[in-house]
Image 1 (cartoon, rainbow, N blue to C red):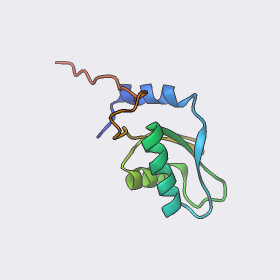
Image 2: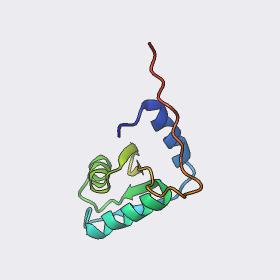
Image 3: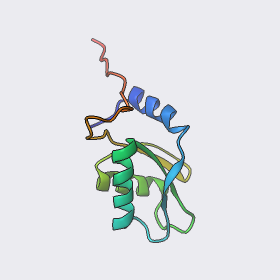
Length: 106
């Protein structure tokens, strides 16, 4: 699933108000971190992470590696922070994020 620029902009706006819940430290991206991110994405759809100073990965590398491991999309990377998005599989979730429709010009 590839996000359009309008969808990315919408998700960036939503990400402004959420707290950072994933911290990538000196151990890099391990099994526990992937599991934590996966659970958070399933519950929230949109998560914010931070790469700590003692990590050997850059923010972009960490975000892309975590996105592949959790089957999510990188929304943005700014400084040491990054935002990931994955639609939830729960059909009964009340506050699902509804992305703007992709309208192509003819």
